[in-house]
Length: 593
Image (cartoon, rainbow, N blue to C red):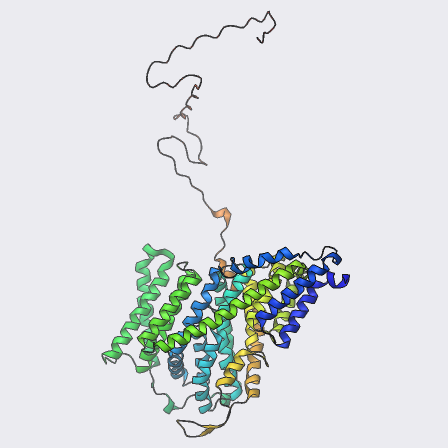
């Protein structure tokens, strides 16, 4: 009994893992495990030697945990339904289809062009939807048949689509970054700013892999044939349009810089983008033909999602809006984009609301279960056990980071990112903080690591999403009339393996180059360079602090005499004569009568 009482924390954690591996729902596993061990802990308290601090009245703290600032009253978590609603509306509006078709035509003439298009569109969808399932399913439905039609290797095609969809995990406005910021007690805006560069670097690594594969195995990703390039040529026209936009942006920046300071570059870029968008719309509607069809389509299709990205992320990074407010503006912007395209209907809104409610309820119930579990786990000093276990790893901070990332990588085979964020992160954060690790950097590092949970065979959710839309039986292609072989589950799994390795490399790069994340703090200020200047107060004759006293020619004015508070106040009359005090007689002893 004493052994069980003094080792309640590891037993409780191991029991939770067993519950999850058996297949019980996460929220109920957390809550049931917490209540079960609370009952056991109260009974074993006399045998624990002070290791357990549980009592029945502690259950009264649960309602406050549920309705307090950590769950029901947590304003940060409001961003989750907003971004989810935004992503689902955009997915229903056909934005992914338009982007994939246009970018595929742009990159089509080069070998691996469709794969580049999928990665580029995956990054754009990540920055607008923030939902992995929507990105993977949309690209699987649209791009996979086209890639198979033109002879792409099935493993390469499946791996590129699944990996590009998981960019929504790390590129803001990612839902997991919101959860990580909440669990680490840090700002969502700082987490977004810290994750931006690692997300773009990871996108570059995916692109580099496609480039290497197009050189090593050119037959695995052929270029689009000439008859498939329906938008024709026009890259020079597109470059000319980009150059014109840059010129307008620079001119607007020079004009706005004196009045707007640091924000002039962003405002100038916005003016340049709006200019070229208006030109493309006018060129298309009025049949001026100043731009090529390809340039028109690229500008018209790309700028609305880029504008939505600026509306959401730009306002957050500029400090104009909080992440919750940015999510609300993004939801309104998504509705506007769908309405402009004529694809906004009551059915689309119902589907978006139903999916948003389902995901938000899922997150809320997991969070409530985590509150029950943490109440008991902290009552048995579980945080002390985890902290001692992790801080005692050899190698100090580096050893801690390596051990933690191995643990999260292994657990990602069995748990998804929500479960990891709610169960593991609250246990790791105190130990990281004690070692002096910046928690924003630590959160981004864990976010990159948790991204592998979508790609791990055999339980990667991105692989399941792709499996649900990939062909299972041979089918006739609607354009060529040829029979296309199905995509097997093994091909999907093997296609994911190289991208899991790339994600592991990204974890190492984040550890080796922390400045990718630490840039969220901005440029450090040297206190020695700060010049304090206090202006002279008019009418007082006082010199500013740090200046020498007046020279001989200008004597400082004398301080006014202290007022005599022993007399009544004088309002302009001559002051009464003060009677002289009698001299004391020192020849006699003092009298106290």
